[in-house]
Length: 274
Image 1 (tube, rainbow, N blue to C red):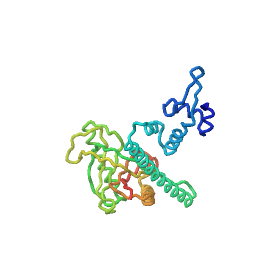
Image 2 (tube, one colour):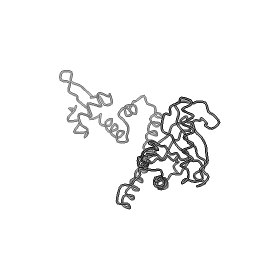
Image 3 (tube, rainbow, N blue to C red):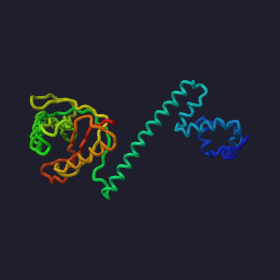
Image 4 (cartoon, rainbow, N blue to C red):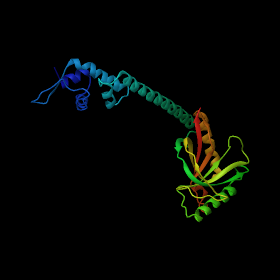
């Protein structure tokens, strides 16, 4: 029999780890002195300890290893757990590869500009949301301001009549942007706490959820949004994505009475991985 300190030295595992394995019933001592409480191990326990260490190295948690080493676990169940871990690791490798590409692009941007990029693009999902919206056509992106102002006024006035308080900032939705740069169908939408009645001008519907949105935040006047869009489109192309839906502009902070330099707008573009 080997004392826990000797067994730890032999197996290159700390005594602290062996005590943890004991508490988890993962590797019990071969014998415990009833008088002193000293733990003793046998060299014959090394194969089980080595298997624990191998599975731990593969990324399994101690709870999962306990299951894998359970003698009642069937071969099929063990194979299923190993395949699941294989899939998890494969996904992690893909994510790390994507992060590596993003780091390379960020380094390139810094080297080209000799400064941190102005815009940071992130990926996030969007939940389904009831909205009150009105539709129109804008002739182009440069002349859309008065049209959107009229559209939002129409929606806000209707919500006021209905005694409804919006749950989040308003947003513009641009449709068919991949197909045209003039006569663009757009919506001015206001998020709602729940569904309400519609009228002839304001329609009520559930804005669909989007699994993956490439998003960038622009601070400043709407006249500078083109730079945000350029940064966003460049990121989408460089990172192997394609646009898969209608672009949204969320007006996180907008007050026409304020200095336009204080406006905060988030541009959201639905994307799919190529």
